Length: 98
Image (cartoon, rainbow, N blue to C red; front, side, top):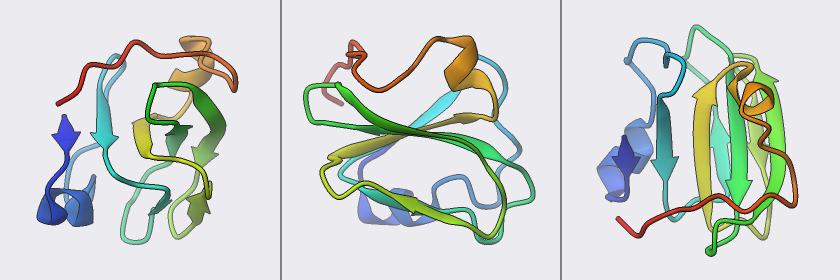
């Protein structure tokens, strides 16, 4: 899923079922997310515009906020997926412009 409009970015994963393995929500532009109102944990990957991973916040529980001041986009994954897919700071993800 891709969220690039204001409304789509505001909604994010709220009122959606948990992501499954190999599913993600790409939010751009974005440098901060919250899990207020969610009932499950997620992994949050903060990305530079060119796809370079700046930070990975794994297993972010409900009612939390996470951010990275240099991020241009965020990739939200099911909890544990970032580690399973070997996504870590310094890795460049092959992203295509939406």
